[in-house]
Image 1 (cartoon, rainbow, N blue to C red):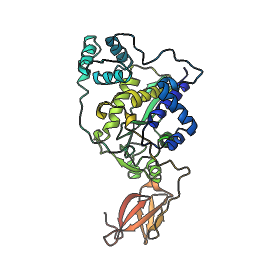
Image 2 (cartoon, one colour):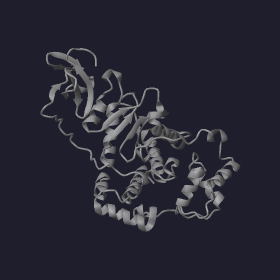
Image 3 (cartoon, one colour):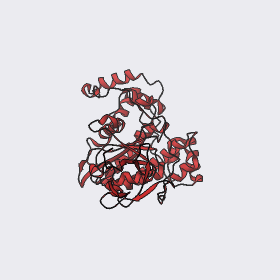
Image 4 (tube, rainbow, N blue to C red):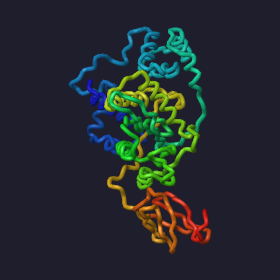
Length: 377
């Protein structure tokens, strides 16, 4: 099976899993996957009738059924463990039950079997301790975005770009990138925005290309996100736990898709990432979700990606100024500095409750406050 065929089957599986949710707009979902409603209902009906086999093209016949198990339960456990070496007893038990196995033993028994067969490293087990963390109440309230540390491949280096939905842990984007430039990230995000819609807010660290002190906390990439009416926020410096869910996803990605692999090029990396992403979103039980899969908690946003971008508009009472090349604006005979990333864009100045003090806005984003007497705010 070619890499493209694997990708197509993965997309069909993801589509039918999302389409079965009661609160999903079916028409918008079909549009985001670039298929007609007729085609969407075709794949959904086939999946309901035949399961995963129904997503194959009719001219292809599967070599075997993933739900058929003729071996003993112990062998079934070790076989699934061989396929997913990083999974523990709870994930294996849940996945075996989802695959149709009967009388699956308790998670503790599964763990004991792994330990007896030498498949469980005691030192590794101590690293995976559950902890309580905050989550947003709805899908697309917040997406966490970061680059996982780059690694060498036979033809250069791979920079994995990841975006995770905070509420569901659904991996929205996993892209094998050649670099960490603004254009690379923007292109990947556009692809995800067209499929899943726009989030309300995105959380990033303080590194390039979404954080840069030279631009006073705004960069060309975050300016673009603000134009899309996506609110932006940054993690606290030296506090990686702020991005805890995406950091945890990186450890899972590393353990299940990168370690022990030898990659030829970025296409090879992307093929492996696509396979991992399907397992992570649609098959792998997640302990923080009550052993459910992320797809059961996720639905695409109804805020569609606008193409082209809408014009920037401000209120009739706003004082509008264009940001000059050096990141300066002129207001009431004085010069004030704003982030250089706003060069060429209009900003709005609005009076505050304090006399002589104005708030500077770019679209919905509060940039800074200025005082006409020149004192620092």
